Length: 554
Image 1 (tube, one colour):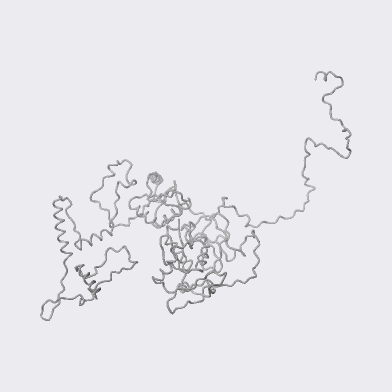
Image 2 (image 1 turned 120 degrees about the horizontal axis):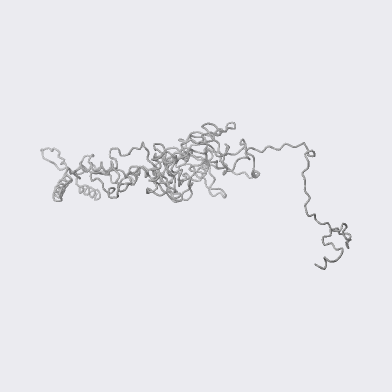
């Protein structure tokens, strides 16, 4: 570099020659890219076209917010949207839809609607039913072309012939007694059901469905609107529809059964736990069934008042905080499994409130919406006051207005089994001590004891402080008197011609002393405290055996 720098007239930073050297191929033209891109400026406002075409206004239905957006609109009781005769209103049953010619107000769920009125909605009020009057544009595919093939319509009164290919079986109406025939035409619910079913008819209808998987599954949403058409499709092939309920609706099965009969027009002939058997009626016809429009989507659930209040009704803020702290160490009375049957939950909570003012139910693995719905049902059915849903557990308080169901014989809680009413300063020894005179019983046990005393099968000891020898003497004395009362009976004396006592044969015994059949009905209630005697009062059991042997020998 020193040699180059010493040369005369040598410029190390000479500029690029103005004219490029001639290239060998004149056809090719090489143009180097500029180091800085040429900026592109927008045209000036003067050169813009002042005539702008009006933009088409989009349909309001396309502006619906997404379900995850925070759309909220407060509503009050009454009509919130209307399009002619099609209205959406807020009432006692929540959000309902009125359509012209409908027999009742349509809802998404008929059984799982809270009694509390909604305070807001999460989406604009639109009818979830099909066009033509619904203001919603067509966003799907074009409808299919009408088929040229004419499909014959078979109903229950005109079923297809047996053995016809490509046709499913259609159940005929019935069952009918001998000499009766079905009635046709539009009929009321009572006329469709016909005469009440007998016991053997119910068994004949229910038995084939006991172990059959063809059923309608009723889940957390309860009895929804589209299940109406689903049940009628089951009734087309069979006379009984099997409905299996699981989860939240099973807390109040009476409400589910009432809604099923009211909306479908059928009759529940058998119910076991969460399984219900719904009979369509003797004169049911699938062709003349009531037809309802289907819901095209599930409407967003409205906003209801909060279930958990910071200061519940009847408590102060400090008392509510104290109950919530005590509830953390309280043992749950039961554990609810997912998709279970909670038929006895309301009874269990009521029984637990007899011994403790606080009750906790454990709900591991359940969805938050599920155990919140369960808590709302318990609040209405028990009733009770909800305190918290922390740690997937429902904590309830029985309230100030709570009254025991055993007013005559109240249940006294055992201190060792309760951890709520006692103060934290009490020791374990004080909690385990209980009063000896305290008796925990119910009215049924009291009635059984009274019956035993009246029949000389039990005796009341007035003195409690008895020595073992004195107690043994009283037991032996009572044992002799009870056996004498059991093996004695009133003599039946009839005057004869000569004034002597005649023997009365079993065949000549009056009808009021005749034996009662020992075959009890299968549906006999197990709650009966005792059965009536089968013979005259005080008769020996051996007499009954002798009479039966005589009948067999004849």
